[in-house]
Length: 212
Image 1 (cartoon, rainbow, N blue to C red):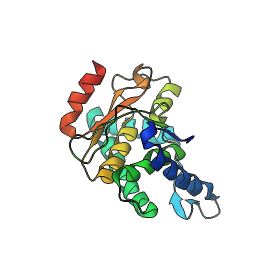
Image 2: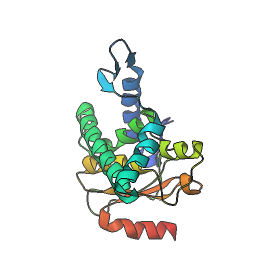
Image 3: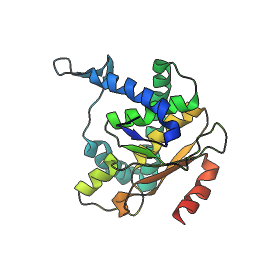
């Protein structure tokens, strides 16, 4: 079908093609109105931020005040709630109830908003129960790009916004509490940014299997 802003297994292409058409139309209506101090996409207000400020500066400030682990949790959980809210809103706009259709606009919006490209891998099995499993790549997350540009390497996977936002979107889409975990990260020297998403009690199992 020639998807441009997301890569998915062939069986998932139809709902993603519909979502891509909608989101492309939405961002085609992007208006920058500096005289009003506003940016709008089809009337909905957006905020444009420098990625370095959003990620590196904020993370460093949180880590300095509260410790690195708290900073990681705070950023992940904040992004998760933003993703949940956006997922609910897009489901309403598109008038969709099927979980996969609710999921489909997420990666497309993710790309158009500048977070990263999403590639859902063929072994994924999105479901509405604890067997839910998503295995995916973000070839170019803004977090990893920022750290690479600054010449910083890290010991832990860094793409916290990306993991949290995706998990929030999918939790809302499937009405199931799932969490995202980055298992390989360009910022710590891996070849790619690779993620797994599942119910919390399944994450260790999936992560160990994929890393093993």
